Structure formats: structure tokens, C-alpha cells
Image (cartoon, rainbow, N blue to C red; front, top):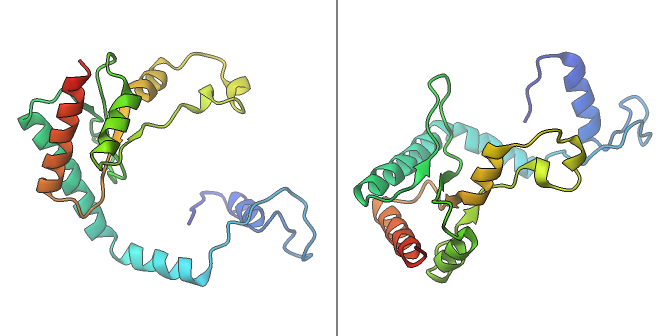
Length: 178
């Protein structure tokens, strides 16, 4: 689903999502496009998810708040992303930054051995070969976050017992790497 301010942008997006095919001439492609059309089943799932949006966002916020509170109780030195007053977070991922001295790949591996899936925060696009030519300056914040950031499990079904286990395990992993 996409929303557009300008109707011309919406029209062009519609063309691009349909392989770049010209709307008036089937199977004639004026642009290199994509196959971003949804199936009926995908649309039905999307509508059902939208009907549950408030509940899902509430559950995700509860998970994030549990992480923040339990991390404080355990006195873990994790830097979570702060909230912005003009927006609300979907808490799609609960991510935090670790101390720069910690080997993030080893922590992720150790957590995996404990049955806990974590992942590194995304690399900055400016570091990736196809986009490097567009990068005309250093991006120290995104580079630092990519090197120290980890995303924790953030399913809306997690409860405080799950989060306690995850953070206790993370605490053990971190203490073994100091």
C-alpha cells in the first residue's frame, strides 16, 4: 500500500508496479518495472492485519516497554532508540547499541547458540557497492550504529518472562566478551 501527495506520482507507481507496462497498451513496456501486484490472498491478509492494527501496535509497544524496563532493572548498558515527540513508533524492531568494544557478530552467534535469534542493525546504504558512488560525505552516526547495533526478538507475543530470558542471556553473553 502506498499513499501519494501528487496524482502523477501515484500513476507512475501504478505503472512501475505492473512491470512498467503502458496502461493503454497491454504488454508494451515503456519503463523497466516490477511485479509488485498483490494476490487476492495477500490483500485479504493485509485487510485483516489493518483491522487489528491498534491491537498489534499496542502489543508491540508493550514488548518494547518491557525491554526498556527490564534492561534498566538488570542494569544493562544498552542504548535504545529514544522516542520522538512528534511521532509514535511502531516498534517494528526493538534494537539497541552495545559498547563499541563488544564483538557484535560473536554476541549474535552466542545468542543463536542459546536459541535466541538476533540480528545486526542494517548496514548504511552508503557502504554498499551499488550506492557508494552517490555518497559524497561520511555518515559517522549510521556507520557507528551499524557497527554496534543489534535487533532483539520483538514478536508481539513475547511476554515479560520471554524478555527476561532474552535479556538475561544477552547479559551473560556481554559479560563473557568484556
